Length: 231
Image 1: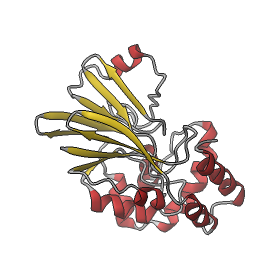
Image 2: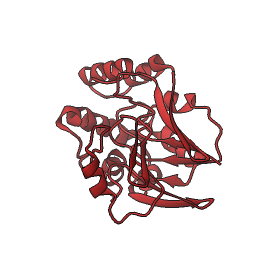
Image 3: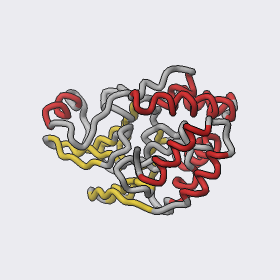
Image 4: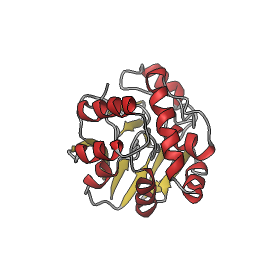
C-alpha cells in the first residue's frame, strides 16, 4: 500500500502538478489556498484527487472569513493574499474549505493514521517544528491512538519517532521554507516513510502572481520566498 501525503499547496498549481507519484491513497493536510495565484485550480485538483483532506488555517481564513492566525512575519502577506483569493474563489469552493474537518482518522489495512494541519488535537494554528522538544510532542499526542500522525503548517519536513508513534510533516508543496525551492511531499509505503522533492516551474507561478491584484511589494516578497525556499 502506497500513500502520497501533501500539505501547504498555497494556490501553487504548478508545484502540485509537478508531483507525479502514483499512489493507492492521497492525504492532504490543508492550506490548499492563499499566497499563490491559482487557488481555485488547486482546490479543484485536490477535490479530484482525494476525500482525505483536513482544514488548514488559511483554508479556514478564506472559507470562514477569519484571521489566518499566522506569525507576524507572514501576516501582511496572508492578508493581501486573502483579498485576492477571496475574490476569485466561488461560493462552492469557499464552502468546501470552510467545512473540511480539522482532524481526520483513517484506518487502512490495519494501520491507523491521523491527519491534522497544526497539532494532532486539531489546533490549526499550532507549529510543531523539527526542533520541537520530545516532551512537547509527547504532550501533544497524549490520548491519541494512531500508528502515524501526519501534520503540516510549518512548511518544514520532519520525521520523528515519539514513543511508538511516528510523526511526519511532508513539508510544503507550494511554498517550501527550508531553503530548498522544490515541491516537498512524503510517501508512506508499506511502513516506510520518505520525504521527497521535485522541481517545478517556479517562474510560471511567479508570472501568475504578477497577474493578480496582490500589491507589487507583496508579490516581490512572495517571489523571493518561492525562488529561495523561504524568506
